[in-house]
Amino acid sequence: MANIVKPSLESAWQAAARLIARWLDRRERIDLLMDSLPEGLVGAERRRCQHLVFGVVRHFGRIEGHLGRLVAHPPRFVTRAVLFIAAYELIESASTAGNGGQPARIVHHAVERAKELASPAEARLVNAVIRRLSREVPGEPEPGPLAPAGALASYYSHPEWLVRRWLAEFGAPNTRKLLAWNQSPAPVYARWRDRARPAPDWLAGTEWPGFHAVPAGRWAEIEALLAEGALYLQDPGTRLAVELLAPRAGESVLDLCASPGGKSMLIVDAMGEGRLVALDLPTSRIDRLKENLSRCAGVQAALVQADLLKGAGAVLREHRLAAAYPAVLIDVPCSNTGVMRHRVDVKWRLEETDIAKHARQQGAMLSAAARLVAPKGRLVYSTCSIETAENEGVVKAFLERHRNFSLGRSVSALPWVERHDGAAAFLLVKE
Image (cartoon, rainbow, N blue to C red):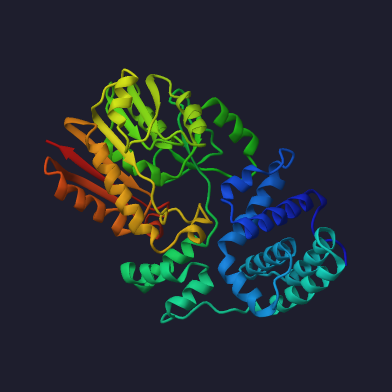
């Protein structure tokens, strides 16, 4: 049988296998794994590699369940990676109408790759396992409407404890919608920043003003627009907190937990002129924040590297900056349960006790942020979580402790309803 993958895509498949082998072994963050790809892997090959890696991690639980029943003793990580990628391709092909002989071609290709990446003996194992999966996966039924948490967790590849949590919070129909949403590949959105010229026609408009759907096959033009600062890759869900803050022209705004700077740029573009102070810990993401702030024309931007929970006011004064602001945004670290469609590995790193831990830290950070708000000022607390404990729960506890603040307005987005990343934001007004 002829090789079914074009030569230009072979290195993408092999690169994906190596990344998956590393992920299975070390559970590295997917964004860091993708950053380790060789610079020579570009364009369609790089996109294909990312598609395979994200697909495997997205469907990891379902695939692992199948392989666990078929393979008594897990083989080497590179061989397991071949099995996982081929299994994902079977899942993907099962959802494609008229897939014809695709399963047979997937089996053949996996065996050939196993010969190159592993050994002839391991290739025989791959052949036996993927042939069995090619008969099981295409006909695997979706769980019925009364399916328990375990069945939903297995089919939709989510931790069972998280599915149970969502069933209690959102009910069975909405939980199923959320699970299916998380399992679908995320489109790429971008925000047009250049006020002097309209966005190019090939950037499709969306229902969210200023945000566009990025089409395939235009990456060279996208990169050029990103480099000049005319375009910024950003999900429409990020706009909610900044719209609630409503920064005004000429105002001084403090953006806490600012890295990597997407909301900072939204604030700058909303003001047009004024001052932005972006504060965050000196982590690996600070370089992205610096780069983004360098593209903030018209607004004076200052970067402060400090720990909000360790006297941020004193650090601001050391930098000869104000210690209180009329508008403060704090987009806190959270469980990321609203953005699992994009951050496909979050669900495998999140533990059941983490949400309560996040809520405690978020409460402390919100209290610290409140000390940096000027009288009559506005404080927006935001997350990319859909958990009540991290949103309404944190804000309610804050208001009970800080009687000089009141809740002005709040907004939340559930991904399967709003059709973009999940988020929540709360406008707190100081007396």
